[in-house]
Image (cartoon, rainbow over all chains, first blue to last red; front, side, top):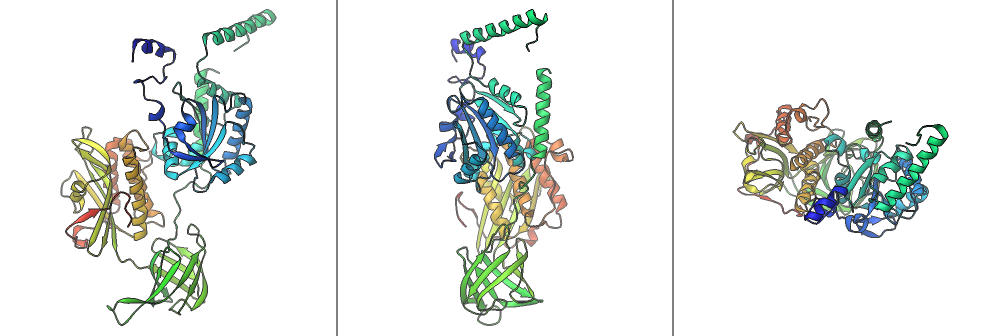
Length: 217
Length: 324
C-alpha cells in the first residue's frame, strides 16, 4: 500500500486496494449458477463483482416465512426501483437446488410479483449452493449453520466495490431494511454531501421557526 | 431509539426469526430405499430359496442354487421393476419371467409397509407380509480415529475412515485432519496415517471407535467423505478454520449412520448449553473428545481387533473421484 492509499483508506476503510485487505474474489465463491431464465452465470464474476447486491436464500415450496419475506423484498424493490438493475441488484438463491429448477423459480417469482429488473432467482449444484451459503450466511455455530432454514431469515447486503457488508432481518420494518441497505451505499461525493447537509439545515431552521425547537432526527 | 438499541432489537428479531423458520422440511436428510443389490425374501418364518438381484437400471435377476450349499447361485429368471419414490416408497411393481418363491410369474405389485437400510417389508404378493433382507456380500466398517498432543494447542490428527472388505480387496477412504510438519492439514488422510488406526491403538493419547456398518451406510458415508475431500482440493471449505470443518465432517458422517434408524448411540454435538464437549474444548480437540464419548457410548458395538476379518496385506485408498 502506498502513502496515498494509506490516507485515502481512512475515508473508505473496507475498500479493496491492490495488495490491501482481503476482499472481492477471496470472499466469494465463483461457482456457476443458473438464473430463473436458465442462463448460466458465475456467482462472483457476473453477479457480485463491482456491484452493490442484496442477497437472500429461499426455496419455492417454503410455506413458512419465505412468502412473507419475498413480499417484503417486493416492497424493498419498489422503494429502490430507480437504482435496481443499475447500481443495485437483488439475488434470491434457492436452498433446495435439487427441486428448484430455473422454471420452478421463474414460476415462484411470477407468482409473487418478483419478476422485476435487477432481481434474479438462482439455482445450481447443491455443493456450490452450500459453499455460497456458508460464505455469506455463516454463524460459526455448528447448530445454526447446519440448520439451513435459519438462513431464510437473513438478508445480506454487500458492496463489492467498497467491501462493505451488512446484514438485516428481512422482516424488520421497511425503513430499517432500507436503512441497512443505505449503509452499504457507495460513498457520496463532497458536493452531494454538502447539498444533503444544506437541505437538512433548511428543514431544521424551518422547524425551529415553527415550533421553537428541532424536530428532525 | 438509539442506534445500539435498534441493533439489539434487530439481532433479537433475527434470532427469533431463525428459531421460528425451521418450520418444515429441514430436519436430517430422510431415509431412502435403495433397492440396488441382492435381497432374500422371508415369509411366515420361511426363507425363500431364491435371491433377487435388483440392478440400478430397473432390471431384476432371480438366482437359485444349483444344489445344496455351497453350490453357486445362478440366474434362473429375469425381469424388470419400478419403485415409485425412493424417498417415500410405497409400491414396487415387478414383472418376472418365472415364479420364484414369494414372487409369482408375470406382473405383480407389492405395497411397502416398512423399510430401513438393510430390510423392507411388503404387504404382498399374496396375503402374507414378506420381509426382504439385503444380502451383504462385503464387510463395511467405519473408524473414528483421533490423537491428541500433536499440535501447539494440544490437538492432533482426527478423521473418519471407511473400510470395505470385498473378498481379497480392502478399500480404505479417510478424510479429516492430518499432521504435516506439526501443522494441521485438512483433506484426504494419507496411508501412513490411517494405517496407524487399522488396528486398535495402545497409546492413551489415541482414541478409536470401529463399527460394523451396512453397505447403505457405507455408501452414504463415502459420499460425505468425498464431498469434503473435494472441498479440500478445490479450496471450498465451509469455515475459515479447518478444525470447524473437521467437526462438521465428523458430525455429518456419524449422525448419518442413524438416518434409517438408530444403529449407534450418538452424542449431540450442537454447541447447545448441554453440549459439554464443545463448551470445554478448543475446536482442535473437539473431534478427539467426541470420539472418546462415542466410544464410551458404543463400547459394546466397537469391533475389536480379534473380531475383525483377517486383513489382506495391503489396504488401498480409492482415488478421489473413483467409483466403487
